[in-house]
Length: 278
Image 1 (cartoon, rainbow, N blue to C red):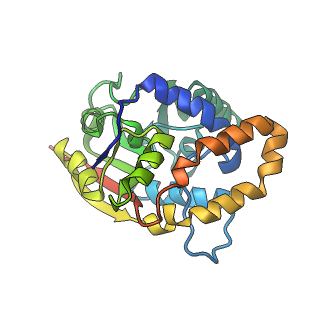
Image 2: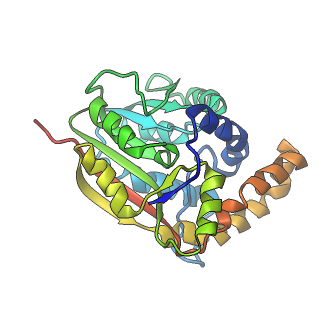
């Protein structure tokens, strides 16, 4: 596990996303997570490449109509809306970002699913929900900001009903060579730790979960960062017109560290696990 130099508080994480999410929301249509391109010749637009991750991760959950899902770190709400619309599930989304909370509520209302989706300010390290409140938990690139992922998995385990599932995706450390590049990557995302795949699995198991499925698809995710840059630059003028040149310049500057690592250094893991039935 690669460790950062400081523990980032929920308030700091919220401020980070308040600053980064508006332009990210614009570029990725409400889904702030990573992309998935099969190869360099894959012509899918950025929004489709990002939605592939949504489908790939949520597809491991085996959702059934009427179930209740906790979207832990819901971003601007597009994934929660997708879950409600596609699977007929109830979704509670939580975030520590005021911007994301407002945007998510607006997105759900515009999609006509406000009766199925609710969004709340919430810290996943100290959930306010009673034991066994949910059938499934989704953490789509949100665990990366946890000071202690083990504590978060304990909370997920507590709020899940017996037989409930957790599915998460996040970055993983694939090579500790050239640690300065990795440190820049972590600083840009406000990461305290960067676990390996084996460490992610151990974190879930230590909370009591049984691992049922996992994959490491970094070459098609972080490994396609050049395709993201090309797609984002293609929309630069459009985004600058809406947000201003200074905002776009600041957004670009803050992401320089994200692109610092070599392709082989940063992986992307997708894991699905279950709380044992009694």
